Length: 368
Image (tube, rainbow, N blue to C red; front, side, top):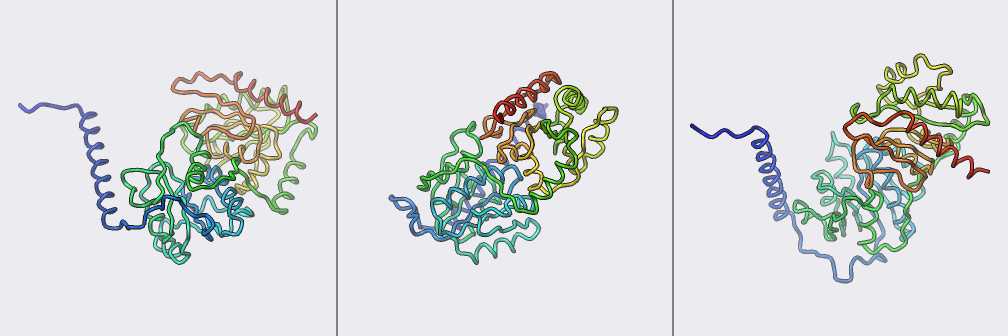
């Protein structure tokens, strides 16, 4: 009779084997595509850098948190051409940014077009901002034809970068993870805060939106984003409803609801029965939403990319974490309250309401 092993153990063994096999394959690729050029003992001569590529092709929040990299490069190398490579979702938020000279779209369905465009540029320096190993990031970095390549060190991609930074601290904020690569490359004048830039048309549209829809112009404006990309990462809609009701009954009549794609039914069911009802925002571009957050007093949301817009806008934020590392992904450079609900549904609406109320009181004192 053959021994029987638990399915969980077999699954873990297979995943471990698959991971080892992938690592070996990447190391073999490194043997084929490695080069002899290594980093000189004196490091990268920044005086010789005329063009820089920054790769950040993941989600919107990561792109927002990477904007200090662009600003720091431009501050240290004002005459260098700064190019950023992002997915289509990240292009809009970088528009009007004076620290970026060129935005290149990562076309996942036509990768050869992006690779060809990068190879034509002949960059002097490239930063791969992904702290975890990514095959896509590594290929784009290696085949960008950049003279010097900087990124985090993993067994799979040691042949990709000449300057390899150890991924030591799991609790370091993501903005600092990005900037650590610049410090390792010799950049000394560092900008730490994310920032988004707006144009006159966006300013006019958002000003009009606020003016026309604030019930009480003299009262504070609170934005609430109840939806999430993954439903189980979101706080209870009924609890959001309770907080909205408390705010509009006792603190401010100006509550605007942010509705993401596909969240119309969620929001509609959540505000049904409320009197007065909050204002549900129309569809906005990401930059218009960022400007609206900047013009508001407090944002209440789950742990989503919207939270990072508040960091860039320096708007007070109450954020509910049901997943993720708060130290790495929490709000930064703005007043904030982080409330966690892990596993048990034990975060009460009264606790969230008091957190919003406290930040509104802080804002009132600061604006006197």
